[in-house]
Length: 252
Image (cartoon, rainbow, N blue to C red):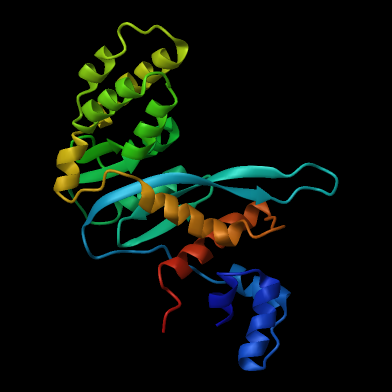
């Protein structure tokens, strides 16, 4: 019960709530020690993984008094409908964990435009096994940053929805501007990840990374509790604890 409560709220609140629920006082320091001596095993699935998505979140590290706070990245991966895990500065371990799971071929890999995410995907399986898809909503968001004619943007969006990258680029041939050039470079960088979104969606295949974004938010509800700061050496255990809760490991 203590592990369940402290996975979802601060150790101090877990102390208070466990006393209300059971009449037993378990000090917040004991709650914390209980978490850090626990052996949380990474999730293992039996069902073949057909889709995965990866994204990054941030955690606030404890610094000496008087020094500015430090925010550092962690990476989370969601095996769609099967579970999720998060790793702090352990990209190799993340890839190794995914590679240990049974997976279908092709394996749908969803991510935004951050190159660091695709570098991790490159360590998962092999290129023939992966089907990399650029998050449609991230693509549209970047298109919106170009600005200009709404009609032109609508035409480009319609072309990209069908995966027609070259035709989309041709819509900008008469418009020389830094924002346009940046967007064209973005399209060229990810052109092999820009698919026929219309077809994929009709086949019931995910085209957006909303699943992993939701996972990051749910992890953040614990690691970003107001005022929370974590020792660097404790972050991985805290992430394991929170993911164990999200994966239902404390259910009766």
